[in-house]
Image (cartoon, rainbow, N blue to C red):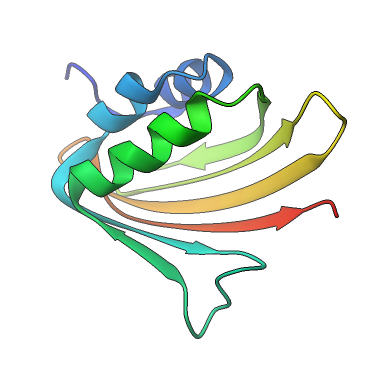
Length: 117
């Protein structure tokens, strides 16, 4: 399936800062929840639909950040991965993500992020 999300395509998009590739992985009605220092579990940031998710990836991929896929596992219906992001000044961000896959596309995803301060 073209643009199907799998471990190989995730690594390529992540480490290549490729927002367009990332967006191709999501269903039109996808939902992403982000939990971090600004969005606690009781009030996560919720992005609904490809447009909102795409805007987030455009922002992230246009930053001078090096992304590295640390670990990943997948079966036919779920994928989990962790990544380390490093800014030019040495600040690091760690993200752990869990995604629900339907028809080769991400339907729901939760990201938990921790930032250096």
